[in-house]
Image (cartoon, rainbow, N blue to C red; front, side, top):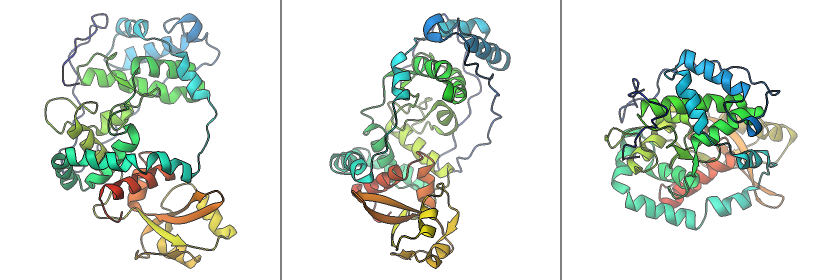
Length: 357
């Protein structure tokens, strides 16, 4: 993204609008939330885009009307955009595959062991100066930043090759279950193109629209991406400083506390009461003192007033280990809503050299 690309002539894109500035390094990254536009209600009875094309679809036309009335694009520009977007049926196939939840002992092998940790050490050593500088300014350990990039994109090697114009348009108008979400992200991507003075067909990422080394959705990019190297671009695709600072910015905005722990092992005797707590939605609804009163034995020093989530991981078939996740666990969980994901980030970070997170 360092090189400024020529804008699509068909879209006649204007100069970028007032950009939502990233938080200055070292300052609070939380920004005032802009009002979210109310997207038109999705009509599942509309003729499918797979048959009539994007501009022949009633939902697309309602989206165009809404965007032309509320945003920086004209109707002609939006119609030109959808003329250039390509429907991707294989994305719908991927989204419709039954989800399978692997146990921790399988997830760990591919996400938090061996090559992932050794590659993380190499990544950290190559970029140590800037990662340590970002860590000091944001208060998020360099090893945690590297671990997130590692688990998301294998340290930038697997960022996805789908044009967002294609993936988000396909999901916004041919995936009714989450149409509202993907229409919002398509809206964010179009605004992002204006703000970054970039061709909207240029942005590439995963089949679901996640971008760059940290796999930000367009809405996350607009809120938390950082131009750390100060070259005028928030380049999470090609700039390690920008990608790393963006991860740190996100985690700090979501409550990361400097010097805080993520995970502490516990011992317990499973009871219906304790299992009910484990099955609760992930949130810091319990204090460590409350968990102790239920018979949970905290294996390392943690103050009773700290808030925690109790969870378990299947370490071999039918065998579980138990943990509490503290404030910084929850900050990372908001990046990806998986307890296994957060544990893997912690394990990679500790393997890189963070110590006892």
